[in-house]
Every structure is written in C-alpha cells, then in structure tokens.
Image 1 (tube, helix red, strand yellow):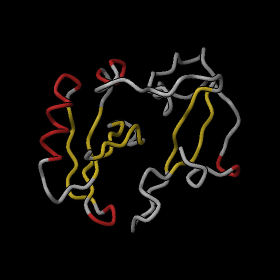
Image 2 (tube, rainbow, N blue to C red):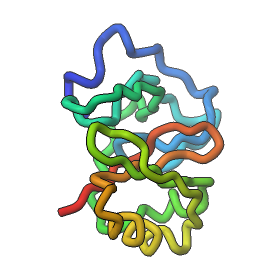
Image 3 (tube, helix red, strand yellow):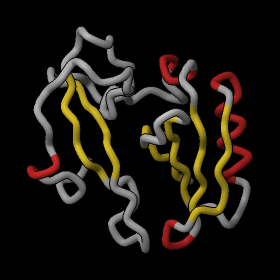
Amino acid sequence: MSSSSVSDSSISSPSADFGYGPCRQCLRTFRTGEEERILFTYNPGPNDSGLPQPGPIFIHKDPCAPFDGAGIPPELRGLPLFLEGFGRGTWTVRREPVDGDSIEADIAAMLRDPAIELLQIRNAEAGCFIARVERV
C-alpha cells in the first residue's frame, strides 16, 4: 500500500468481528473471531487513473509478511471471486466470475484482450478489492 492511498482518517480500530477477509497484505483469510484486523479505506486504482474506486480492505493487526509467492495463494482459491478488467483511465472493460481452480487461465484470457490494461481480483460476495494483476 502506498501512503497516498491510505490516510490516518481512513483507519478504524482493530476488530475480530468482521468476515473472513482476506488480509490485503499476506492474502490469507482471517480466522473469524480469533484474529484482530484493521479496516482501511483504500483506492486500488493507479493514482493517475480517471476514476477513483475507494473501498474497504482489512489487514492483520499483528505483523504479517506480504504475500510474495508465484500464482494465486491457495487460501484465495476457495473464495467467491471475480475478475475486473480495466482499460485506459480505469474504465471497466470486462467483469467475470472465476473459479479458483482455473483462475490463472481466466487471468491469462482476460489479459489477451488488448483493451485491458490491468485486472483486479475482487470478492464476489462483498465486491472488496483483493489484489491487482498487471502485465509484465
């Protein structure tokens, strides 16, 4: 997270009562009722994008290591997910539900569309931002 995306006024007190997450930093789901988390308002779009998309994200209250593995973390595969493809200015080009078993193929298929500049993985129940996928 960049400091320009999260401000002190957008941070809420720790709580263990919210849903399963996942944590936006380590990408692990929360153990509901056991792990405290902090709620932030976060704009996942690039700072120079045409359309701000602020929304809630959670991170563990206690330190956790950022996810740095290859591919999709195993804990995300069982969650209800959708991919959102954005073009220039972060205008929505395509939005599709995905299956955890085929998410890499779904990501590759969407990135073959030349109109899509970046993808977001979102929770299909709450619509919350989970991760951004960019072409390399």
